[in-house]
Each structure stands twice: as C-alpha cells, then as structure tokens.
Image (cartoon, rainbow, N blue to C red; front, top):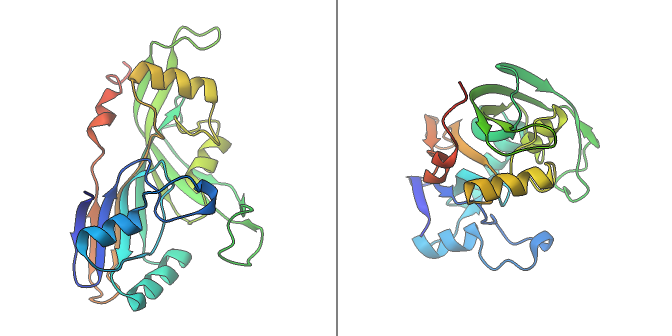
Length: 232
C-alpha cells in the first residue's frame, strides 16, 4: 500500500518507493506495477500525475484528483512558477560546501512533451550536508569518498539533477546511466542494497484551488541509515 502524505478534495501526494514507475512507458515495457494504477485502486478513484519522478527516485509525488486541477498544475510544473522542490542524494566524492550548477541541458530524444528548443537553460543549487569515507578501495585509493547533498532544481529539465551532478564530476551513487558502474556495484555490495540514492524530500507550491501555500514532506527511508558516520 502506498503511503499517503497529503490528501484534500483536489490533490493527493504519496511517498513513492524507489523502483516504482509513475505510469506505463515503452521505455520499460516489462514493468507491470505503476504508481497511477496502484493509487487509483487504493483510493477508488481516478488520479492524474502532474509531475514525474524517475523510476529509481523515491519521495514526494503529487497527483490531481480531477482533470481541471491536473491541467492547471501541469502548467505550473512546466514553468516552475511558484514551486520549490528539495531533494537529497548521495554522490561520489566531496563537493564544495555549496554552489550553483548553471549548465544548459539538451532535450533528451525520448522527451517529446514539447517542440521547444533542443538546448535549455538549467540551474541547480546544492549544499553538502555530510561527507562520508567508505572502506572501499578504488584504484590506488584505500577508501571511497561520498557525500550527502541537498539539491534544489531551479528549472525542471528531464533528469536534470542526475545530469548536473555528472557534469560537476559528482554523479549520484546508484545512477546506472550517468554514474560509474564499478563504483555503484562496490557501494551496493558494501551497503547490502542497490538503489539510486536520490530522494524527493519536499515539494512546496500554491494550492491551485485554495490559493494557500502547501508543503508536502517525505522523510528519507530507513535504508539511508546504512551510510556511515560522517567523516571526521
């Protein structure tokens, strides 16, 4: 059963577990479980996803309970106006304490939502929360450095966080597309769990019907405690 974080007459938000697709897609034709269908069956009424999280990403996922609200929120997510999203991720290495990644991103070939320009401006703020040193040899190094970072995307490009972190040479641990395969496998064996270490922690917006501010929070799951005590 999906964990419901917020529900009113127009909106419902869940804590999406990692490994669950939001909806059916030809890119992952073998999957049979989707958040849209599971939530619909759980609450007994149709739902409309207004944004998406990658299959491997956990955390806050928002749905509308009627088509009009879905359309209104879809425009808000497309423009990014009045929205604030916060994520947490574990990345390779020790990034700077804080910074802004300002790096345009090319529209992905399978992203056919719009016919806009192929290269779009993209910005992500990051802050390093904790630094870890795992006893995993890497090449000539006796240990592996990783960090917990807090991320705030200022734009909403496809796979923006994963692509931006790769751009600054601190890919997200467990990212099979933009990360490092040998490192991902070594960390998964060390922790006893393989997943994309990316979590949507909070979503703040103006409610499309009541016009009141709304913040939905999803704490990181118990598996995040597998990470070691911060490096000294």
